[in-house]
Length: 507
Image (cartoon, rainbow, N blue to C red; front, side, top):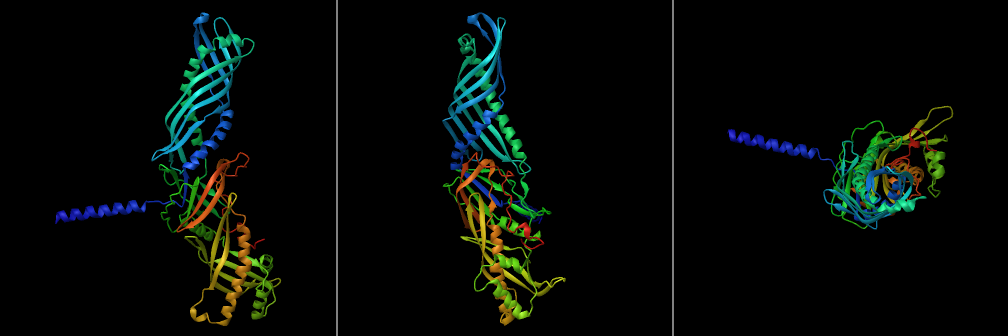
């Protein structure tokens, strides 16, 4: 009996731990995958960035002392200052993924032309001047390890750093350059020694400086007047032989409430592809969290006058005049109309292969506005509008458009045969189709900015809808002429409904 009780307790303990571990599993709302093609292009773009950086970088002085036996000088103290790299070349450079570790960088046969000021002091003489330093046989290897800190920022560390310059040639300039160049060769060896000792510490300091910058990125950032976006890393990057995956939280919150939505993300797997440099998977959870956040913030509530609807109405046989005359015919009213649409629940998001739909449960109210009087409701009905979401990437923006698939009043089937109800269903459908959706699409045509850090733009982009997620496939281009976005994340303006529609008619 005792043995059975112990076994039962252990079984319960095992099941509880299994439940706890599964409950703590967090899945990303957004995934970003960089391929080997991105690394290969990164070499080309990186060289341009490094060239600009090193030309602006302050390099520590090179100081030392050397005896010149052939001149019978016991010592010469030298100091090379104001060191500037004017040109460099790393023709054999590669970046490669190291599975489970990081990214390995390798370069050899590099060269660099450096200008510097110099000063020498000895018991016999002292002087100053300028010099050119030519370095060749530059070799570097190291592994950049990527992880995350407690705040969801990426952090980098450099492992197995090895850097060496094999040859250095100093050429002095000035009135006594012939004299100094005669003993330049003995000085090249100590210069190389000091330089090789400095290289890895300098590179590691640059990595630490980069980490400081990464730690200042706001991973929780305001999208608009309604919402915030959390795109913090939820785990350390996942690295395979062919790519690196970044798992981002990818959840949208109402501006004043950081409570997680009442649903959780589910896992999704990016397809195994390598034709593009970058793949970005945006899960259905992300769009659902955005829908919930905007609904909670009241962004889906719209009040429009008939004049505003008329300005955006597609003129055809079911034009606004025809629609409103039918309403007037039913109610024998002549006062100005207002149309108020309010979402009753968060719009329902569905992503299926090749199909992105948005179902909007809402109520629509038609009101009149007599002069010197408050608005009076003519009729109020609940409805569900089913729309298809069209997607295209234009430049650096994701552009969406809505088209009405069907519109149904939320009424019992027994009432659907009522002629007046059917007439209103057609009327309200026309108002939605020809009045409200054109307003929405006019705003949506501005597009949602895509991330554009460090002057990197998207080119050759494509977008596909899979079950449960959206996939953006794109190449990258580094362009120094691009103006930097006002924020490092580049998601400003990412909203489904314009902030201008909250609590007042659209302009």
